[in-house]
Image 1 (cartoon, rainbow, N blue to C red):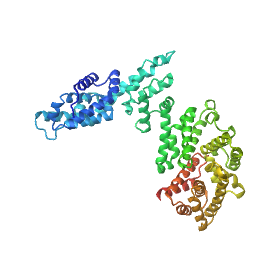
Image 2 (cartoon, rainbow, N blue to C red):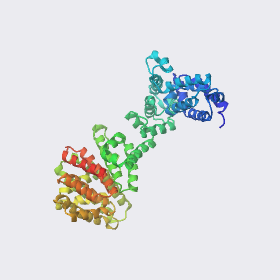
Image 3 (cartoon, one colour):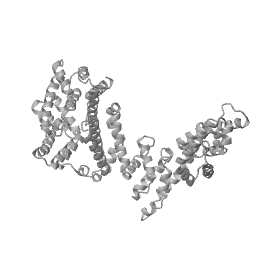
Image 4 (tube, rainbow, N blue to C red):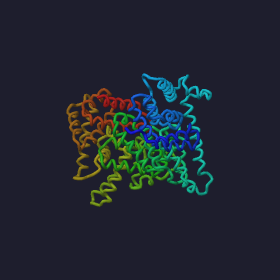
Length: 555
């Protein structure tokens, strides 16, 4: 490999000398701005050192290396960057002689030990410990606090930059904010930088100016998604308001985590959704809700039978509505603003949670919802009008968002009398089969009715009749009716009054396929989220639900 160029050596040595211990704002800014290219130079030096046969040869080939690495080891910005620190450690390790051949190599070994100790150890007796002993701090804390102090000054400068100005955009255009945000790119995952990152994002919202470095926005967003950076909730929301791309990234990240980790997510889906901050941000910023809504509805049109996606949409909407209802009435936007494409008559009945309706009124409420949805579908069946098809889709998507009413209908079907079952079965069928091509809806309603009849006999008769067991398995094996029958089956398993041992035995015998078990877990996840928000808690049902989830996870 060719030796590093003399021009590069002179440039970086000058930088290292000028930076010193980076205790001024200008030094921190310049160090941070050059960190990425510094890493490239250190990588080049490392590759050169790895080809040396001894420390003596390395020092002859790279006479600058000792002073250069030594200065960087005392720069808190460089040390705070994990990748730069790792390169420093590797360079120092390459210089170390396992069997020193002369006094120069022995002296170099002592110095290298002290530098390594300075970087990775807080033990008493190290050079670093002696240097900062008077301050009463370990080396790690010394560098951390040194960086914090400089960052605090820069943060204060950002906070004051818009204060007292009649025209704040003029101040933003001078490039200082852009320069600071560019300096944060390489240190975006450094905890000490969080206050400055927060101040920059808040500044951008207050000034209404796009003066932040695009790479800074991208790096902060990726660091948040990968959990390598923690910011205050308000700052994260500012980021999403500033950059639609970052908001889309957060929404897609939540979706991907749900699709990739069924077992973990299905057990605590509502917690994951709440922790994502997306529902609360949506309640305060309508455009955030509309953006997320558009992403999830597009995904749903591609994989409309995916129960994980449906469960996520349902839980996200429920959490959003809880946050929205928690606001003061005068601060709350009307529901129409969040659901602009839906018939207004559908909003109140569907967006009212089951916990807000007396249990004895559930059947009437569901019959009301069914009649409204049925009127929308009848318009579709009357002709080929594109607007009619669109109205059906919007009504169906709202039903998916408010899937807790479908779960409520399935729960009531467990003990419903035949004369009350029809509107509930229609809702369940429309939820799983919204289109009516080839009169599929009437066929699927017949399948739902047949499945309901057999499930009543299976779960409410002792012992469970084998004939009904085999029929339910056959219905589940049909690709056209799997989700619908599974929805009914899961609710019978949770809400019927038979012994838990019998229920788990039936579940083991019927749900034998791995894919069907995964689907059942998502239905149970939706049920659990609805029960968690119920006005009263039924310990028997919660215990039964947990047992069923454990059974499916263990088999």
